[in-house]
Length: 53
Length: 214
Image (tube, rainbow over all chains, first blue to last red; front, side):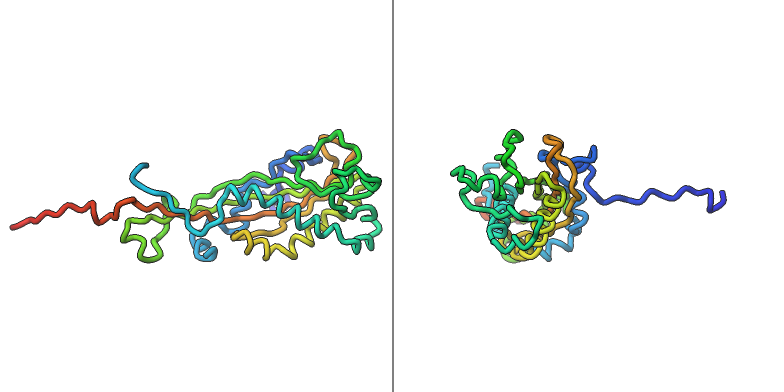
């Protein structure tokens, strides 16, 4: 397949899909996924334990 | 487990932190929006927080900013805008290692003390509400800027691993009241909950003395 025929990959969106679904917000939304937060903050690496002390 | 006693170390307690963090954010925003200097923004006219104004029902009730926890929100209160409503988001736990255990830092292991650490990550949502999209957005931007300035102090005071403003959402209709525009500020935080478990009796007392001769 030629390069021009390849479809571009969808860009990864690091937003919170639960917060702005239906193009609106709800006061009862849950916020971002906690596991995504942990990944962004680097809380899942063992080295982080030493940094918290 | 009747054999052990529970000894929490110097560590943020997850319940207290997740419950009181929105209240801490509310206090910061109240003190910030109580300053009259904000009137320099044309879009923030009538967005000054006046303490006690809502409960007393004074004549400035309509013209002041409401900064409160989202628990108190009632969609039927048409006079409550502009408003900043704060609530805690989901809280999640991530696995750090096998059984959440980490190495004993010193002499504790002589008594058989086991040390544990597990990380939590959560969010605080600050909803800036207004009938005007520019006003809601500017309230959110002003809130985000103020909270980011004090993020380091909040992190130290709460003994958190991280506390940062991660996103300011563009104004969109509020689902419960579509004529109101909402602009959310998302704050992400993380903390490590640490605790230790110590046997009531020293672990050395469990050893049986026996002599094996060859």
